[in-house]
Image (cartoon, rainbow, N blue to C red):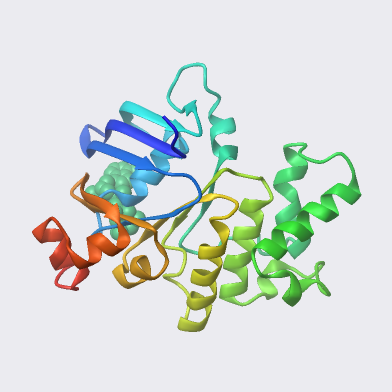
Length: 253
Ligand SMILES: Nc1ncnc2c1ncn2[C@@H]1O[C@H](COP(=O)(O)OP(=O)(O)OP(=O)(O)O)[C@@H](O)[C@H]1O
Ligand SMILES: [Mg+2]
């Protein structure tokens, strides 16, 4: 089973209500895999299931199999924090810790998790992550400035750097550009395409144009199920499902 993420017959209910209804998913390594679909279809819930963030919610029940990089995510022997390190997450609202410095926003996770042994190693890791996130050139002379001084797009790239510094194998992004302007969005989209060299990217987006620009594969979710999945070119030119076609041509969503 050589996938970055493999999901088999996944059912999730919250407070007794079924939210995911038999999701199957196979995400190859080092691709951008977009999940699109209308509001409420379960995209964010699916991401939260993959990294066990869902454990933090009340009244959740999960059935089915989730395997990330060979780790059986819901096996009783699996340690949830280890899963969350394996699977990084970037959210819709850029959420750096505002009064913490640019440097410390990136350094905090690796420090707490003892991923480095010296200050020099930490400096190198912070620089590496900021370079990978295309932010280094803009901040190298003000690493001690609070993160709140950055623009929205820079803050989102800082959040990407923060996630990368933990050396995840999978990076999930939940609508990472929906609060950004067109220029910042274009920068993040370019970055997403570059990132797949280092990680497998799972991108949730409302925006089917964004999916068509950056993704190698797309899945279309509807009412807790994946109605269609395939290579981006095929899904956009020859959607197999009527609802997919209506969605990508902007008729609903
Ligand atoms: N903590 C929760 N408690 C109860 N219901 C929830 C919870 N989180 C999500 N849901 C429900 O699960 C369904 C799917 O929500 P989810 O947030 O996964 O959708 P989504 O596809 O990400 O939507 P959007 O595009 O608006 O972000 C919705 O009906 C939502 O109300
Ligand atoms: Mg969502």
